[in-house]
Image (tube, rainbow, N blue to C red):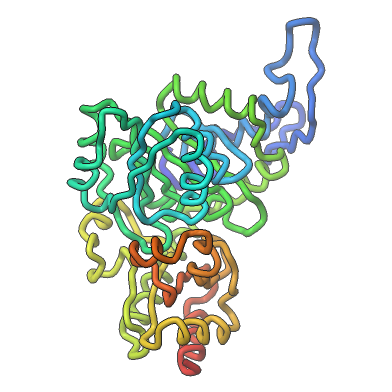
Length: 380
C-alpha cells in the first residue's frame, strides 16, 4: 500500500461480528477467559486491548516499522525507551530537545544512574566525539523543538552502528508523512501522538516504533509493568485522526512554507528558522530526508522579548497555547511555556532566547493566518 492508503486502511479490518467499517472501542478493563489458561488473546487492558492493538498496528505500518507500542503520553514513551538501559549507561542526546525531555533526563533519570551528554547532533562529528565505551543510546530530535535543528539520520546511524549503539529519533515534528527515520538507519522512532498523528487537540499519547523483536518485547513489558497506557477511547480518537494525516500534513507544510517566507521578508522579524527555507543551515539535509517541512516555525522579532510578548498578546486567530501539530494554529513562548523548566543559562547556551516565538501553523486558510500575523506585527 502507498502511504496515503496506509493512513486510511493499515491495521484496520471490518468488525467480524457486525461488519462495522470503523473499529469498535473496546472500553473494557478485563476480558472473560474461556477456561483456565485459555483466553481470546486478551485478559486485562493494561496488558493489551483490541483498540490499542489496532492503533499500534496502524502506527507501525505508516512508520514503515514492524512493531508499535502505545503509551499514555509522549513523555511516558520516552521514559519507557530510556528505562531499557542500565544504571551507569551513557546517552548522547541532542542539545535542543523538548523541555519535558530535558526535565526527565536531568532531574529524574540522572538521579537513577543515567549519564547524559548533550551535543548539537546536526554536526555528526560532535556525536562521534561524545561516544564513550559505556554509551548505550543516541537520542535525538529532528527537526528539534523549538529551534528546528535538522540532523542527518543516516550519518548518525553510520557512526553508531559500528559501536552497536541504538539510534532513537523523536520525529514528532515531521511525522511519518514527511520523514520515516527507520528508512534512514534509526533503530527506534518515538512520536507524541498528541500532536500531528491525532491532530485535533483531543488526546494525550505517545508511540514507540521499531523493527527489533527484542526491543518490542521490552516495550510490552514496560506497558504491562508500569501501566502508562492510553485508554481505548484515546486510541480510537487517534485512529480517527490518523486517517487524514497525509492530507493534513500537505496543508500544514504548504501553509508553513508560505508563513515562513512572509515572516522572513517582514521588516520587524529579525530571524526565521524553518527547514523549508534555503536560509536554514541544514536545508540540504532536510530536503534530502524529508518530503516536505511541516508547519513548525520559530522566529525572533527585532524588538526582542518585549516585542515577542506584544505579538503573542495581540494575535486573535493564532491561539496562545502550549501544544502543536493540531488543526488550529497555535503560538507559543518557549522560555515561559514549553521550556520553562530548562534553566535560563542552559536555554541561552542552546540559542533558545527569551525572545523566541514558536508557531504551529494549522490548516485554516493561510490568508487568514497571514492577516492575523500582519495585524499583530503592526502592533509591535
